[in-house]
Length: 458
Image (cartoon, rainbow, N blue to C red; front, side, top):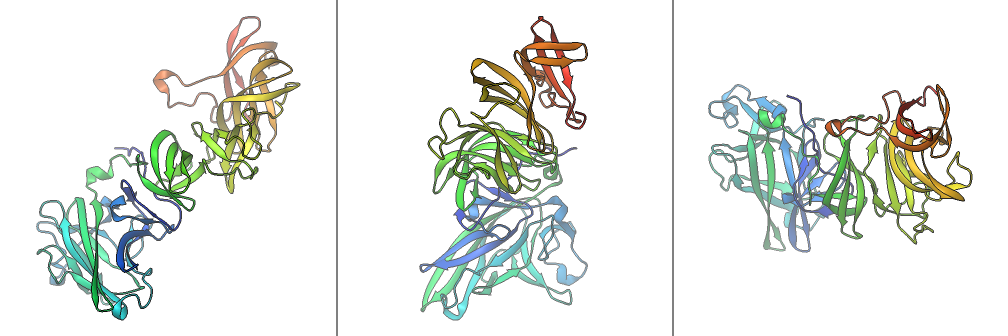
């Protein structure tokens, strides 16, 4: 059964964010223990990007493929489920296909705790009926040593001493599929006084059916980070699949800690790790004085390029209501403006771009877009192609001659060949070889579907 993709959220830099669960699939992340202003701070620290999450904001996914067979020998009986030989395990060694879970206290400064130590106990567990969790280590000779186990209930033995400022990894095993909620309590002496802190961490061990299920791309109210600011998604917009990775690019409204709410275009890779393509507070790479304000639906090219029609913030960098509409193309190292309202419309004398209607990415660095141009004379709608070289050339426009195989004709109206209602997922305007299909009515009142050669055949 093919997997359906929808995707999840993890991004940017050192801050703490909280909201509905972000799903960690392949992240290097820690059960983080900090101590600030006389109190413990238990959190999730994403080592891949520096983001800190509140524990309830993260679900650690334990994939169906992460199951292992329990080794033979009585020393492994603690791990062997009744009636089974397999467990779901997050391994202490890194894997590109699984969460690499650590226990980290690097944030605790030397001397903050008496003897520079604290104890971390597994104090409660919610799990599928009859299921247990075990956290254990293995020495150089392959012998296991148990750290935490809920198999026979939790008690004072399910506690371990940690050195402050340290970072360790262990094997974390689950005996059955389903959701587990592990509550840890940190305890330390500070100038002779006992200090404690508690937090609950969520893990989900996949069943075989889960592994074939839809992958959650993004959730409303989900927390993540953009740039150096914490943010959450307040509204999800249209999405497009990225054919280069199998991920997705989608429009959203976000709420940030420092800058309020606004629009964003966000890219998610196949593992659900998000990176912002552009947000309402970003400047185009080639126009640093300007700022984006709104974005139309994104389109994605064959190699993962992202383009969109955007509106600039007025009164910033000289943008006005007559010059605030742009087409932007996102690629490394940033997002640049390709064409802007008020620019000269190539191929139409004394006319300037007034409004952008639609666009299609047809080849790396190349796009086709529809726009309205106005100025001295009657406004005209037309279609232009932007080549990878950066040159923009007219394909067809109202009132302009259009070369066909049966001679030139004068264009009356022009539209892209749009998706049919019964097959909206099919891209019809541009073929895989960059041939452009248009629906054109000419001044002789004939209407035709015409095919314009692609960039590689022009």
